[in-house]
Length: 429
Ligand code: EPZ
Image (cartoon, rainbow, N blue to C red; front, side, top):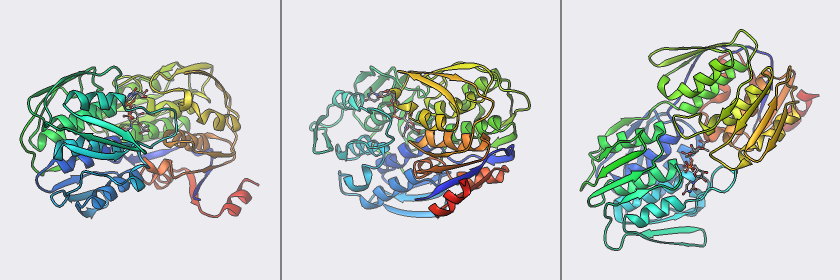
């Protein structure tokens, strides 16, 4: 059971290079099966969620060649199945993108019900509503979703009852080769949705309006293999920005799209942090006490829910009382609060609202990573705490953060990975 051992107190300084966006990669990789020839995907993050999806593609019969750690060539032509085996696919929620992609490829999909982070119910009713509108029948039995389009897929107007990233992307995948016009209204606007649309259009699809709340898709007959490079990861970048601020550091985050980070930059500036934007960089300088602020998570371009645990950690050592309102997920997205409390944070949670009383400092302790972003928050807490923090269950963190230990150590953090439990307990001693 790997752990991270972090000795707090180092100010982070220097440059960090951001990897490709996890939440774009997990949709673009399944989308490859829509093409009639091989695709080369560049700038894919070297993380476990991506490895699982590549494994699924290989299990389905796809031919995979890694050209380097961040570039993979995928030939979907040998794929003959319309099913994704549950054994591994159930481990990540994003495996449900194979439904839309398989419907687009062969009008049939049999995929396990989504797994993923354990924060609350993660329904797929809007996905199924979209598939039904496109002419599909579906059934859920013994943990598998079976979706078929008995009379082919036809365009439709779909109004999403909830702004949902997953349903927006999954419907897009099914609609790009459907007959006629599909309109998705109340669509999510995240950068990774625009990236998927750009990938599909590069292959010859006709997707317009991605990044707005109305997406129009004219179905096409076929899509061709292309070379495509994935956008930088907005949330990885935001995580390092918050870590820089939390440690009173001076960090330049490289290979980013500053526009995607505007809500995060704005919150940091509200807290008294200096944020300097370059073409593909953001420099974060924190040399004065952090001010409190209130945060409400919203669909893009609002403050991302995937940055909520990280900003909560920063607010826990800011001056004054802050409030966080989690409007996207149930209150299970506050599971990290118990772990932060073990380090001396003063946080109370009431439903979807957390009230944070800033404290002078956190104290190192053994903590767990309840989920991916909460795990990142625990790492940030360890960086700022007095003493040593041991973060367990780091497998969740490594679902979405490539080489986080190396990247933080490169910024001057005192952090290492440990496989020896007794060594770790001695360390806390
Ligand atoms: C994506 O999850 C991300 N995951 C999540 O990031 C992120 O938190 C979320 O979008 C919101 O930005 C991936 O992209 C792989 P949603 P997704 O569908 O698509 C409700 C991370 O840390 N809803 O936008 O599953 C749902 O319950 C992960 O990288 C329905 O009601 O999220 C939630 O309240 C964690 N019915 C809200 O919509 C549906 O059919 C947003 O969910 C679908 C969703």
